[in-house]
Amino acid sequence: MAASDRLEGVLALLRANGGRVTSPRRAILQALMDHDGHPTAEELTADVQVHQPDVHESTVYRFLDELERLGVVDHVHLGHGPAVYHFADDTHHHLVCQQCGLVIEVPDHTLDMLHRRLRTEFSFEVEPRHFAVMGRCGTCAGRVAPAP
Ligand SMILES: [Zn+2]
Ligand SMILES: [Zn+2]
Ligand SMILES: [Zn+2]
Image (cartoon, rainbow, N blue to C red; front, side):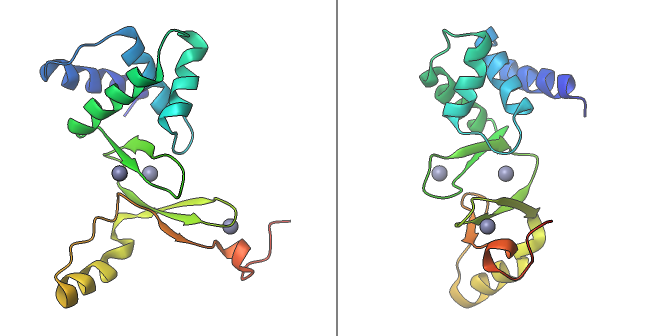
């Protein structure tokens, strides 16, 4: 999907649900699409403020909340810091290295076995996309030689 199609698609969904489409909101969506990896609301605000210095962080938070209710974005906790955001249709889990902060995105089904086991043995439904799996990456664990 082309980025502009995605942007227009989200804006159409927003309008269909009675949301307003404003130029700050366009800029926030654009910033989320342009950002590498997983931005915090604060980082998105900084990106937007490059072109629209009047956009306040609270506006960004409110809009992200609205997008979350519409199922467009999800927030995730990658560690101790503030939540980060990504598009909800890009389904993956996060492995976070507690030592170097590396975030590895892994396919949705990677944790299936664990989920099945927790469901059958403990009647527990894991919500794996909301939090990252914490640990150490191969480099930090010393199992893999650092890249040359
Ligand atoms: Zn949360
Ligand atoms: Zn993600
Ligand atoms: Zn690491």
